[in-house]
Length: 234
Image (cartoon, rainbow, N blue to C red; front, side):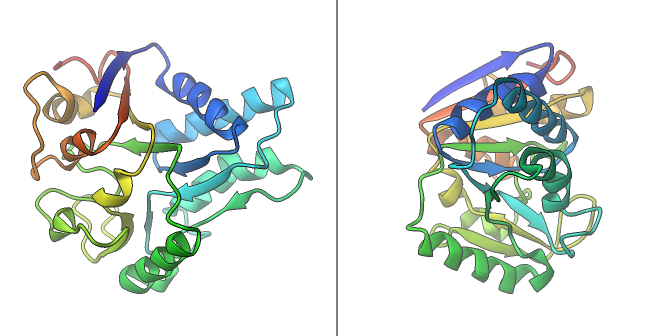
């Protein structure tokens, strides 16, 4: 495991630069939800347009999804569609986007995505983006839930979310997250500072009370991009 914590002025822009490299290499990129990732996707689109980069060879997956229709304002897919896919396509060939069908419900949605991943040959993700909640959750893996113990499946249904919005979820498992060549965590704001310290501080260790802390030991390379406020407890 190689864990690097970087405190930067603009985590979204730093993340976008990493995304450009993965997408340009026709990589498998796993997206996440949240306001900072939205900004990263917008920065990514700007960078791709600026240099005229062809990213149509990339495959975009999702780390988790809320069990709502894809046009619901709570949908991670809708956020990515508005901030990344639609602005990026703009008349170009359709991107290879593998969305989670949260509208099927947590268990049927998880089964469907499990099949899609296995049908694709269980691809090794080149870049996997994650956030961290103030409770330490990542993707839709919440503190002390049974999903953290799952080691056979790649995708699980999460019938009860541990944080707002309180809707069921579909999430990649720790096993699936551990296949990524490069995991990038994004966190901004002082509300994330305690969770960041618990997950990535000098004294951090894998702890089911802090699910994000369980990811780095499984991965070859982990980068944590923080602003000053999120890093204030480190």
